[in-house]
Amino acid sequence: MEPLGGHQLDAQSGKRSRKWIIAIIIFAVFVPIVMTVGIFALVFGGLYFGSKSTEEFKCAMAEINKNKEATELLGKPIEDGYLVMPNIQVSGPMRRVNFSVPVSGPKGSATLQVISYRDGFNSNFQMSLRGEGEMNRLLHRGKFPCKEGE
Image (cartoon, rainbow, N blue to C red; front, side):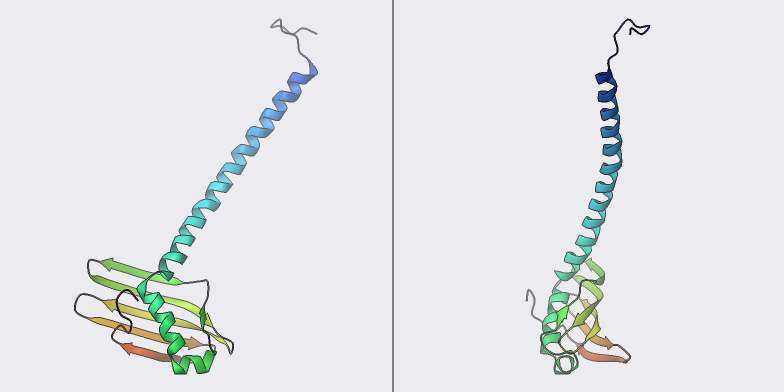
């Protein structure tokens, strides 16, 4: 059979064009999904690893494992959870870091809340533990308890 353009049509050319159309549709659907998942992974990964790498977070986790009241309540070792809710502001020497993170030990779990302010002259660091059905337990209020770079 010969169409108006003078070229012969065969059964194979129709199958090839359908394969290309299907490949293009799959590509058009797949690429945006992969990009969206990648963007979410970057944002949440940055928040997760960025907040856990702060001096304040490392110090709080070290201090809670030394705190007698916390270890009596939760057991030892106390480990942090996956969901960290940070608020980090750094402006020159001034650092304001507030976060809450679920913590757990062999005896139970709670939420650790940290409020920290440091500048070149002062430091103020507060850690409290909020357990299920309990009021907040203040674990530390005072100067930043860890040395710089610890």
